[in-house]
Image 1: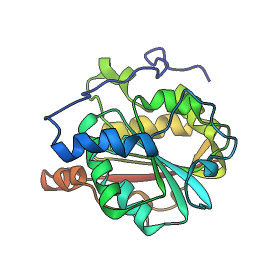
Image 2 (image 1 turned 120 degrees about the horizontal axis):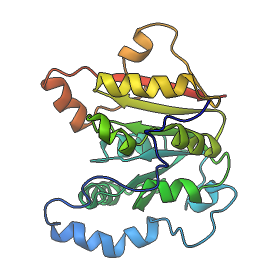
Image 3 (image 1 turned 90 degrees about the horizontal axis):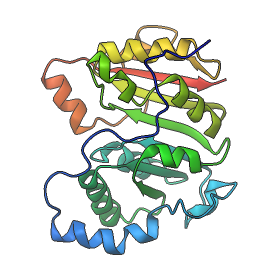
Image 4 (image 1 turned 30 degrees about the vertical axis):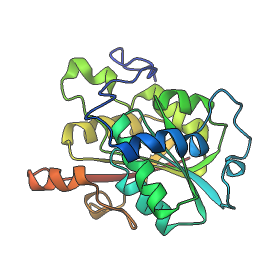
Length: 232
């Protein structure tokens, strides 16, 4: 099936890169911790991403746009034998992640501070067992839909780096974005929606950790939806 003419290759980051000034500790961690756990895309990725972690891990998962890092940190704490890669282009979000990683002494998280698109190109084929994309910017105006992370082309790029049987998990509180993503999943040859009943998308999956953004959405009357798509 041909791609929507309104869609473009997802090669650029759209959104803020910096908010308020960093606190001294946060700024210091950019100089001390980030160089030790940050991915260097100037070097070739290993065929087996588990080799990047300082501890033995059984599998590797990716969270794209981790925001305040609440979900990323909780997942890493709950699953110490899983390696996590978190990517975000927002300076203050990365700063929060660095503080949490430092405080909890987590050794199963690596970060990429930059455009997720570059990271997707760098990662090797079938390297991940799961990708999480939680509450990405919905870009609600139709003329901005080309800026949405999920596109026909980006789904192909995600499929390249996920193992067969692996998962792409997506959450949003914007009904029109949910419909938009489902349309693209249903015409994709690479992913299958796993839902069998309404509760499968109305309720969060096991182990899901609520973020500050989700709590705010619920307070403001928006209803989240949770989707699991399997790599076929």
